Image (cartoon, rainbow over all chains, first blue to last red):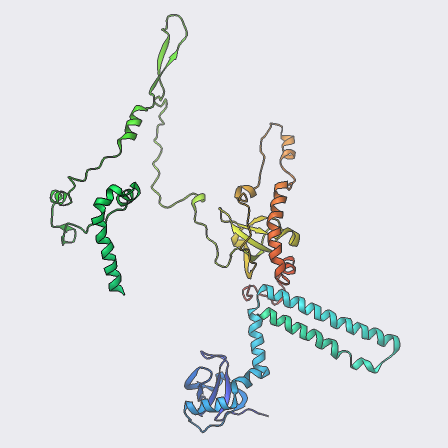
Length: 166
Length: 288
């Protein structure tokens, strides 16, 4: 049922508080509610932190309990947690949310245009397939085609979204 | 470094007074005039303070210490002399008709008032800092700079996105569509009824004609009642007609701005679109 456990070396994401949005490693457990936590590569000083504000990630580091900051840092950099974190869907969703909130009026317009264009292309292809299937009966080609037109407009939209974000 | 600079400064200053004497004759009137105009350094107070508000020397002693006997100035006399000659006439002699009246009368030009009201007009209390509208300070939000795209919120062009040109003397903003893009002409807009977006068009080289002032844009109204009440309502300007000057000014400004707009991709379409709110869109959460 539970896949992520609180253990020494577990990397956690801080969801609220003064260090919201940063990653830390659990160094030791103090009591039922608090852990000794350290984030040398993310700018969090070694401190006690309640479990409530931590959300566990999939990453576990290897170091003995109460290891000093230097050891934590070595383990962190060996596992390359910062890059691995940036590659996770979780981090990407957070980033996308931030970018959406920062969108200016002009960016919103550009995104609207990109979405409209993409939807048009998809609808066009769908209509084509529907017409074909209604005319000539069911064809095996149907399964191949819907994938291609979706990918093309997706990449266009991603480009537009990147432009807008810049 | 500082020591050398100070020494360097001292030398030219020492040279100057030595040079002054021979140079005064040579020196052009400019320099002498400049030296006279340049107020020489003020001396510190020559009246040492004994206690707060009490000086060491009396008024007469200070007169002597400040050498005010040497420093007596009179205003340039020439103007006074001129004015003395040009006193306004107090009386005028006017011819009078009739046989035995003598030819003329001497009449005062400025006469005493013929009526004094029973109660004097109450004296207005002194007020401070109440300026007329033309002298008010005009402010402009920092987010509004020339070339900013604004969203108009009121008026017949509400919701339209428009390019800001400059702030006029009354504080209103001069704004243009451009006309071909969204049918907004050169127009005034009020700062308070406008949202400034962060999108800016580069208007650095654009020349806006100088005759575009508040008087140019002010609404004109004819009101000459001709005592024929039935017809008055027709003669006043019902339909606003676009003058040729407005058209030419519009073209002159817009042609410059359109060139800049075309350089930014999708900006023309953006200016053509209107702003609207829909479900889940809250203005206080939007970043403009």
